[in-house]
Image 1 (cartoon, rainbow, N blue to C red):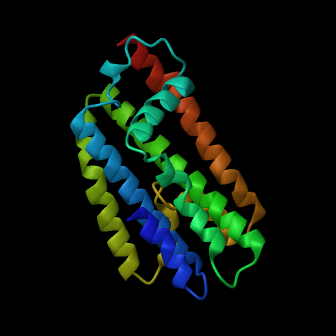
Image 2 (image 1 turned 60 degrees about the vertical axis):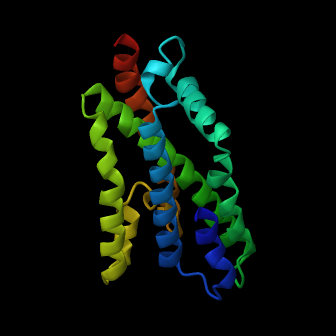
Length: 198
């Protein structure tokens, strides 16, 4: 499904920023679904599987994601399908590189944000409620799709917000950097600390 969404750009004669945003939002939705399914199977994301590891937040996060995605060969879903955007027609190579890099970064951020949110909810005893996230995302995507204001796609952190540089303002390239830094420090100095002490 994720590959098919990116493949839509092959048959699109003109790339529209809001079509790219819709694809990015839908890809984020399916990545979230894959992680929800993983939580239900209780394989690798639960902290009980990692209590024996004395790892920093960054190394532990990479370990958790890589175990799950390597086992199910899903690393390619974050990196390879966006490369299809490089073969889009009638746009400059610079724009192709920009949309491809932003798509890959957005996919990585989606997975990192989901795991961070799940850990934060687990620390506060609300881990089971993460299952409502796909419903919230699907309703918001449908609502925005049927509205006359597709700019709302940018608000979705699981598929939209890291695409803000597509608006053309160079300052918006700071948004992905700031979001990764803020999320990293939230995890390092709050969530991971309580997780390690629990």
